[in-house]
Length: 279
Image (cartoon, rainbow, N blue to C red; front, side):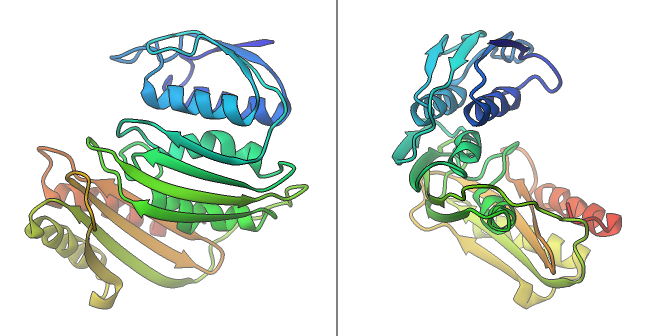
């Protein structure tokens, strides 16, 4: 068993999720200490526990220390077992990051799997559903496996309540992925998502995108979230090039002006276009 210092680097939940994913793939058990020790609320939160539970279930693992606020965890994986699974964060914590934890192992499992994940689908500091569907999974497909995603309900912070489904058809072996250039841009799309908020919020954000990036009217749209669980707002910009589609996002927060939300994602797009890189 190897020991990992969970406070290394950024020191958040990502080192835990990556360790769980790699443990499932390699069969290597590990012990993690000082989990999120520098955070305002140290140790495991509900969203981290959901990722641990998902890894435990998929990998038939033995786990010690899986409790709220725990700063130490031992994980001993067994055989990865494909199947039909449902994992619910129970808060607005990111459900996409739970998928990130178990997906690598299921991409080369012995059979297909279906996952239902509930929690946040559009969160700050996490890849939104749109990124997985339009950017990440198409690259996975080029490596052999097939992953179909379906969003059935949006989940924004702080209400959560989102839900999406993943159908995974694995490959016996992952093929090599070469992604060295993006080539010519084929299309652009701006989606302003508004849930239980005044209409002018989306209009102000859209005005910033169109004025700053000079995108056409037919490339931009405001979408009112159907069957909203709670208030929320996201600006999602996608650039489809010949070799890759890149997705950028920014999320509305209490006390932050709509113009600032849109301005933040516009800057990401400008930096990306100026750099001339695929990722």
